[in-house]
Image (cartoon, rainbow, N blue to C red):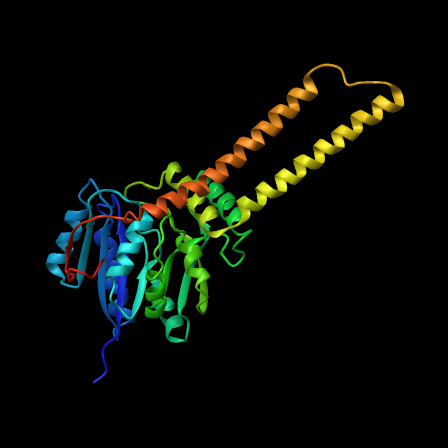
Length: 317
């Protein structure tokens, strides 16, 4: 008798009270209507929510034993929640999506069909966004920079993704901190299918993805997956040296040919400010790399689990 294949739904949760049950119900409806041949499990990861999110998940668990719960001691961030969820997921197929109803659940059957057709990684990427204009602009700038090093990355980025078991196991074998989820998945090189969609406007609650979190994620992506900052330092240093040389030649030319010298302190101040500013910027970039090396050497865990419900003791470690 053949084993029924299982889909694990990994759903990070942070202050998503009110949306969790709706997300669960919509996924269950899609499974019943279009994917009856699959068993399922839900892995909800509560990332230190201070509202009723955890209680809402536990209420779902009381009515469905295939709902499993991981609860953190505090808020460790979305990447930590994803890592814990993927380590806890036991399905033949693992599908990660958000709990805020902005990712269209009706894409799930199509993503599973692509997996059945041979894709090992199915990426639903944001072709358009119904978010406010500031989110759209910052997203375009961020992904425009990242795509210089990752040209295969969709212009709008992605979080909504289906992974075959082998992809999840390989992803979980990477033990580093300050990771870039999208870059790590594409770097693995598995057979990938891309599906565009329009990210819906959030209707329940408000986004907890603050500017500080966006900036942290941007730095992690750029510094973790790209040589671009180092190349920028090298290029800027070479450019400043060239400009300084040309400036010196220009001064010598005017002095020797016409006996003129550049009066005043303005040119000197401009040079000091430009070179000083570039030096501070370069030191900051190098400092970011040094901090990440130090952070890696400390070997602190990416997250601390307060409790799990529905798992064996070692399932999420």
